[in-house]
Image (tube, rainbow, N blue to C red; front, side, top):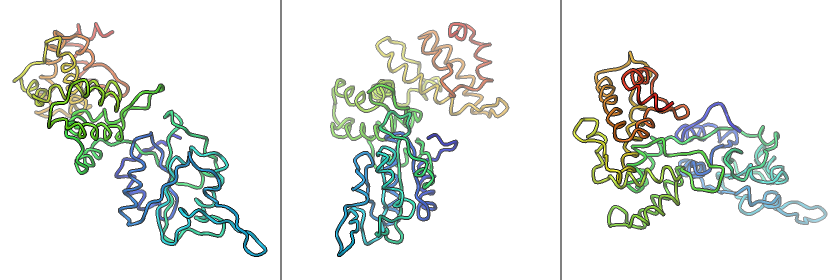
Length: 354
């Protein structure tokens, strides 16, 4: 499912507080984006225990229970994990990964908050979550009857909100500083083949690994850092993260280059550092240059003039990397007015890019 509108972490928290007490909510989102953590945080915030069931590991009897003879009739005994006396948050994770039979077992639990004769305690909340079909995860078609029983939202990663969380959770400084400079690297779409990719969860995993090795406090061999980075996040982001770590001794290098107090590294042995700085430079232009030239103020005018000079300087060091700075990448393109000036002032750069 792809909804026309998405929500961030804070927006989802607000929706859960307002919607889930009266209607079951289903959270769509890619693996590792933070669905489970946000549901646990919601439960903590409202002071309810959170009981999590994994849809991909359930059989129908895990929901409806088993029959018991009661005199001349029988009744179903619901599972102890579900049949509680006090209100709680029931989190149905990977709900769209369970079989059709299990989905049917959820109908009354989700819609009427009951299993047979057992009713969830008043004040209980039911929340479901699952991955999208394009994520390459184990998913099954959700029946229309089940879809229609829930309120649906689609979660996306928000770098600013994730960084606030990362500071509070004391994630490794290298990870926080890197995502601060490259917020676009917090999440990458799942690949079609089996390889690591970048999500809030995988950056958290890299942070844990760096802490275990004491990175930043003691010397860690470059070979180990490569294993940690390439084993956690996408290969493209891992390479740039390692370049970022390599230039930490001069972490203000980009700002110094923009101010004219330093130059792009030109030694071939530092190509990975040059690539990372150029990517950070492109990210800065994407973030700070306005869409319309009329919106330029004194600061962005200075940045515009300096940017054109730096792109020219970069083209003399490495034309391919300079072209990368001004290239189109999906919907992430530099403002049209800026590109017109690049074509006018640096035709060689654009001509070679075609």
